[in-house]
Image (tube, rainbow, N blue to C red):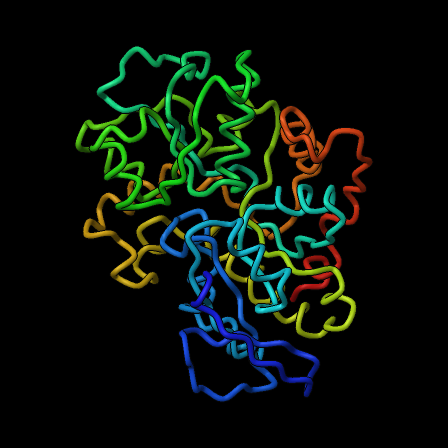
Length: 337
């Protein structure tokens, strides 16, 4: 996001705002909240755009701007820099950052499963499990991203060491597909709608599926709270009213998702999110809709699973005591309308 966000400091309602675009001239408004999304085209982060499309932010009297990022690690950096108020990204960043002395927390939990799939290129049928990653180049959205975390866990769990394979940041969508086609990566982790497109063409197949809670438990040993809305803990303390209004809007969206079909949800999304094929978009959403929480609540044992996964390979977590109670709060979801 370097060069994409210029900061505008305004201490009216104690909000620090971000304006999109180099040399942007838009005026800062005290009631505006900027949220960066770690890939708005990904179905795992669908609740952010859907909330805007349904008008729930406006219903709460909020002026919310959503801006796009290639990967969650870039989004968290913008948050820590004070350029934005919140991030739609994976909950596991809250655990990782606490190990580095930085405190952020999820205030609404969108999903209870990653919604990710490890795909293997059709050119490499020799890769039949993560144990076969040795010598392979594996695609992730970005280094330090949640796809990086999960890929490392799958490899280490299968007995491999970090030097046995190479991680290559290839983004998502068309850049991921191009990396598969050009054999830059032999396998990689991605989300819908990219998954459905590669499966349809036969250029890749599913190696590890984490699109539903059941399949996630098989792969990771428990619920893995993933997509969430997180903010800096210090921001929450000074902006309870804004945090509550955001939670109200997001919780309404989670209930909308739980009560509507994939087709009905897709009809509410911008057409350019279909990636050129609405039927495939709906198909992917129908297959993965179970990843979403029905009410924005954190799965009971989810944080422990995340800590277990990250502790398997993360050097920054070694010898550290992580206070999981500081990585999320249910305060605002509990009070949501």
